[in-house]
Image (cartoon, rainbow, N blue to C red; front, side, top):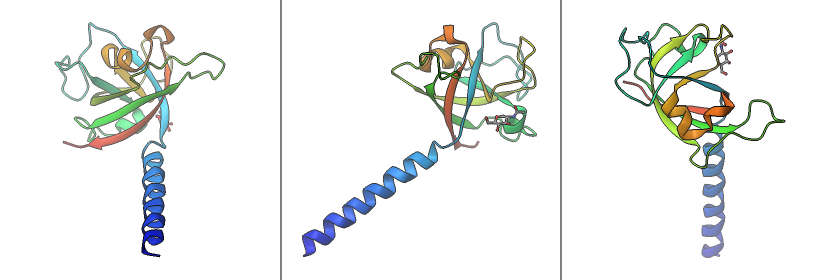
Length: 141
Ligand SMILES: *[C@@H]1O[C@H](CO)[C@@H](O)[C@H](O)[C@H]1NC(C)=O
């Protein structure tokens, strides 16, 4: 009897663990990237010294209080579901917020994340230009 109770407790814990894992990655968006030479970032008014950084679209950037915060960004597929996934085997990168994005270099509206070229290349093939991503805020500074 005790053994049975234990195993259902384990099963319940496992289910809770699985559901909390998927909840934490529930937010999705689109990532593009910007290439070096990098321009001055809106958080610091300086060119970034770190490699793994990101700009955020206006909604996520807000008034800039989010500067210096880290996001875990995970590639989950192509933006156009007809296309093959640009994701690499290592799909996840941690990036620090350094910039805001009001309009992309090509004049189009900003994607959720405008990653550094290095950060994008770690999770997806740059040739794709864009990737669908899941994201999670991990810390604030
Ligand atoms: C920024 O990205 C989020 C998540 O994808 C989205 O909900 C929001 O509408 C975007 N804001 C702008 C201004 O594009």
